Image (cartoon, rainbow, N blue to C red):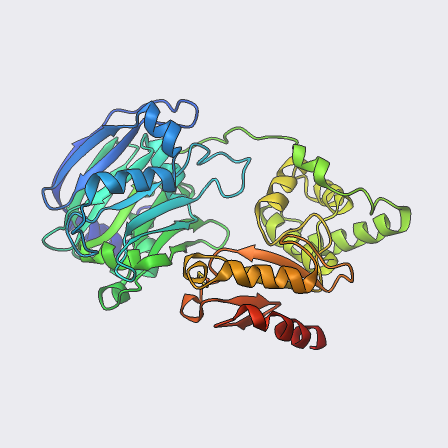
Length: 430
Ligand code: FES
């Protein structure tokens, strides 16, 4: 028997007023595509399904590509961040929602940014992107501006989209996520099928508002939040008078998995000597115990192993698979997807030269060359003495200090190419 929603949430729901409604037919996914997008105009209160053409798939693939393509259909030279026609586009790629590739749960979000006045994209975790695809849409375009605060509710169970007044729910994301999750889930188990996107009150008063994407953590019994933080798209969201975008997904079964991976071939065999293999097994057992042998925490376990061994060795993957029951294929996918992991031993310190947009325009390429020269290695390589690994990375999150280089935990701002030797000398000594 499903637990009834609390009286507060029932009262909130009763206060909803549906302003516009749209019913849609389900579609089957074909090779990762639903082959259609959903466009919602908040000014007119109208809905439209647009086709995803083969040309769109060939040229733009999905995710950020689809978002950019859709943006270009909506904006003109004069579109500002607060223009009604500035769309917020959200999309996941054709692999969205598959379980074999880490990152395939991401949603890519774009809009004209209130910070840069150009199109800005960001990606975010949570389940929204895959749920949107399972609802039958490869992408969502939110355009126009409502007169007063509204929510958009995409109900994949009833196959319906509504724009609703929802006067009693909180604007603040941590509360709104809890309220809408409880409101639309049939029971405790169903809560994981509800995804809430919101921006919070601060987004109304600043240009750096971010979007919070919720997902229900059944272990902690809370709706947790992931952030689409770049570019102030939360500010655009609140400017459109959106209080929340809520998606209720149908319960889904596990998708396909890849049980083994070619990535395994990239693992060096060197640590398969008797004693070091034993040491690795002991280390892995230690780490697994720390995380209560719970396979849900394999990423955290891999982080621990990376920290202690400075790489993920084949012996470590074998031992971790044995201890947790997670397939080696999946572990390799994780270890090869996240930049934080390395299959070969890393240096004591990692030199990260930012080549993101802000640093790029301020000469990041020359700085990277200078570090390559000083260290005698190319990006992605480790010095022979094992002291430094050199990496070129996208945005380190402190663009105002551009160009930026991070060595270990220390951020160096306003770096010039001629600073490379001095920085390395100082870091080697510390
Ligand atoms: S682009 Fe380099 S720190 Fe953001």
